[in-house]
Length: 104
Image 1 (cartoon, rainbow, N blue to C red):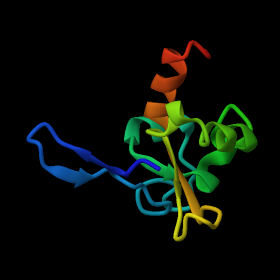
Image 2 (tube, helix red, strand yellow; image 1 turned 90 degrees about the vertical axis):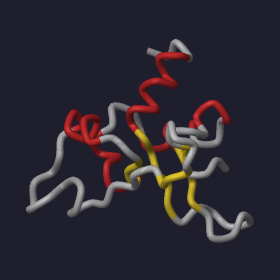
Image 3 (cartoon, one colour; image 1 turned 120 degrees about the horizontal axis):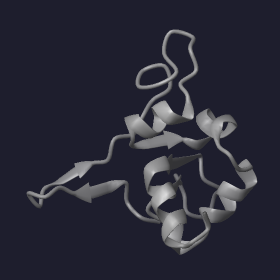
């Protein structure tokens, strides 16, 4: 599993932004659009945004097991022998991966 930390240009390690429902998106009872999520960027909990994706949740979960998608679909485990407690997805990175793989 890749880390959700990445190096900045300065070489310092900083956490990649993990977006929270009700705080960063889906505020005040209004559901953010897919375009708004793209503009916001960062990692989103997959189960909070799966209904806005143009492909099935099962497909995204399968992609998460493929190393080419490791930078954009990150399962969060407490114990590596257990299923993930959460899956995070970076829509912008996923879009870039799909374009690079000629899936679009």
